[in-house]
Image 1: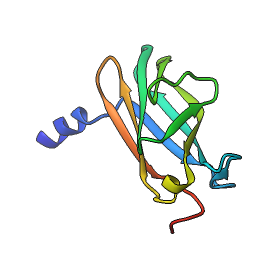
Image 2: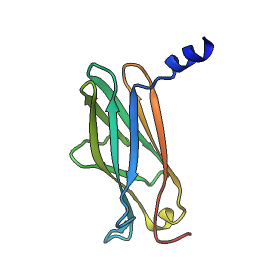
Image 3: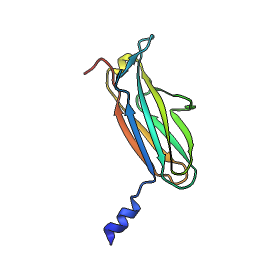
Length: 130
């Protein structure tokens, strides 16, 4: 009975994936900085519309952009219809000298109503610092 109850309590109502672009793995911009592109998919498994925050953490110099979305303080706010998925393309940019350190970048999706969170971590990819 205890295990069954635990199973019900850990049933997540968020599905969150982060997929890195593979070709090219990174792009060097004209100013020398390095950009990684990723695709985010966030599924609201609740039956009602829910608000979500996606927060990106990493080195202080990290710049975050998203196609068709407003990013403020490395945070994107989304309203997702119940039982629907939102997909978005995101760009993560660092100066070349910091990008070479291959620091982890963490993306945290949080349901604004329930507080449920899902965290994904990727390594920033650049041509240097293997």
